[in-house]
Image (tube, rainbow, N blue to C red; front, top):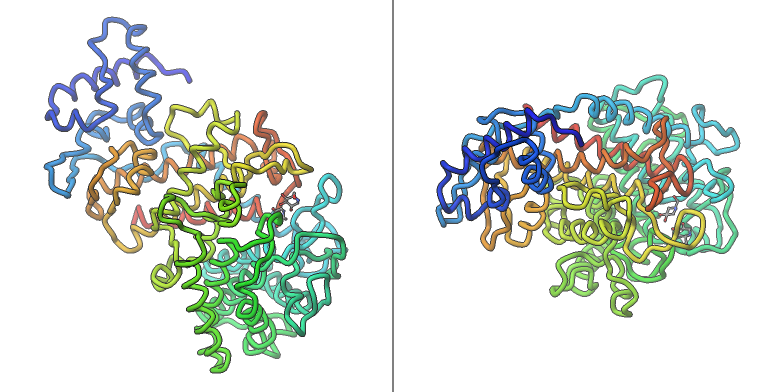
Length: 575
Ligand code: NOJ
Ligand code: NOJ
């Protein structure tokens, strides 16, 4: 990085000035100011402390240091710790808009590109391959090395949920070029067919076939050996289809596809949602393969998304007057909820983070750390539904969720050499699935960072900020959470709860700093997409180049979703 002498001079000069006017307890609190340099005699002299300092600044602080005058600088009055639990901060201006318009422009363009590439991977008019069944979501167009030319129930549900969200974000304006209603409804009709296909996991009658993870692109069964069943598919499908039905209601719209229009949402509930719910009721306590398709056990991602689906099911059963189903759902919901919170081992008291697959930890085979746990929290909680926070464990505000991200970063910043240049500066890192991963996108060697994981990290942080503004809630940093905030915004770690009042200058400052921190994950993604913004499944941990299945639908979906929450957070911050 090249820093002009003017900046060097002004920053160091301002630092010296500030220090001399600060109260002593403030000095003790601040790691940065403890590094304050001695008087400057030349620019060269200034460089050393400057770069030492640079290494400790969060991107937010850095931006301030480099581009703002004294009154704007966050550390001119960050903390006054009066030894009570209240920490009051004044005099810091917020930085809501990013000063980096070029980055903003890229985000905007890439968001559109990502969305279009999602649509190109779904059978229908925009799809490059006409053999793909309408509404079937390809995991990737890649047919060899690796062959991802299939439809996975999980990838499809998560992807189509983004289309539903797009409609909501655009007040149900459905651009002709996208034709989203038709695509979503084709997905629903395709789901009906897949549910009824006899397949290696079983048939429809016993419901066992609903655990089949993947199908051919023309919606026939995939009969090769695979890690099956995977029990997250039905729940994810319930979440997506129920969201669409809710959206139709919200905007007083109807289905547009004749098959669905004639039968209505009662049909969708009875014939598609209900079998999936019944599958969860029947099988939630049975083991199955995880979302990464490798381990037959009980998994947090599966259980938590199943629980969310059951909760949605309770509302739907009420609405469609199915009291029989409602009764069964109540029992399953309570049992699964109890299992997740108490018996599962997903959150042992001695470990600060969530465990995706407890059996692997018990056998000493893995740490249990996995981005899947963060994904689980994000997918299983509707942030605008306050009941989710109460009834579904591990909401994004749970310290264990954030600690999972921190622990993953702490591992992967060393594990992946492309992260080494980021060590010492306050930045996010390129993240993979889990530390022990050895799948390289083609076969087995060494795990790499994934676009899904890296985008998911940023989505978590954007959602946290959105949540605070939405609830108009002051920031309460519990002692266990202070590590995350120390990481991100250089707030000191504290043994006490820190309260930062809603909309105070400190609040604005810290939340803006969170946004900037989350942005660094997207900046990493930007660095590793190719010139046309293509994303594969992974990027090489040494070189950063694309690896694994090309144009992975889920990579685009997770990037798009993260940006969606970024926009939503920024909107509230500036209103
Ligand atoms: C392909 C799976 O989809 C992937 O998740 C897994 O890691 C590899 N096979 C290796 O088992
Ligand atoms: C491998 C991933 O591990 C799995 O989660 C995904 O469903 C498939 N690839 C298809 O994208």
